[in-house]
Length: 63
Image (cartoon, one colour):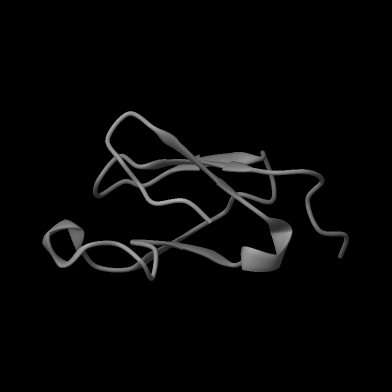
């Protein structure tokens, strides 16, 4: 798992789903209300609060 940074894309594994932002390792100054992001459908998501971008590594989980 990597940390978020402005204009960087954070890659997440299917094992880390459900995806929420801010991530557990985010610095305190970067906190905002937690929002769950649907990354499994398209393979990517963007946080509406901070603009952090996420990309799913590998295949989405099978339901």
